[in-house]
Image (cartoon, rainbow, N blue to C red; front, side, top):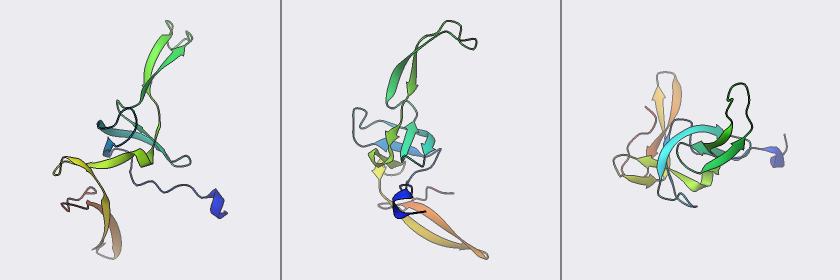
Length: 116
């Protein structure tokens, strides 16, 4: 795999609560529904909602206009800290758990752990 073939590094995971920091939905917070590692984009619940015009199918016989979330780039979101009540940067902390080590994410300002 060449240097150009590597995927971008993504700082959030599925299930994290994030705050959008730029774009038309800046200031909104939501839970990450899925992550696309190849393109570096994330789907956030109730953020970047678009309308799709769909034809009638067997599963949806009426068709019509359906609202769904579209992907946004992972650089436009920050992890949301409940204690600080804002989007925060993340520090990594290495914890030795018996024989193996775990890398935990924690809030850079208050030190609260995101990974339990």
